[in-house]
Image (cartoon, rainbow, N blue to C red; front, side):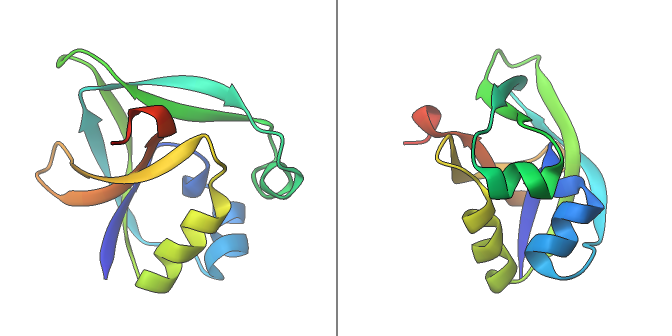
Length: 113
């Protein structure tokens, strides 16, 4: 099992059912040191699953900033399914959440080293 932090469309029931075949159990948490922006998505499969072509994307910010979201416990197969859902603007990275939980999150690709 792994932890996956979502601040965007992976929190939506319809996206979870489409990508994972089930609703995920999660709890509120936050990603410190980041801020949220919005980007336009052009992948029709992702737009159809989420119901929107505008999706949030996080970028690093000063230490007082944080992004609120939900941390989910997922299987390795579900993490792979999440990778398939996210478009090229995102890259998966491991972070430490406000709670101290180590989790995977999708960050702005140009900020993942």
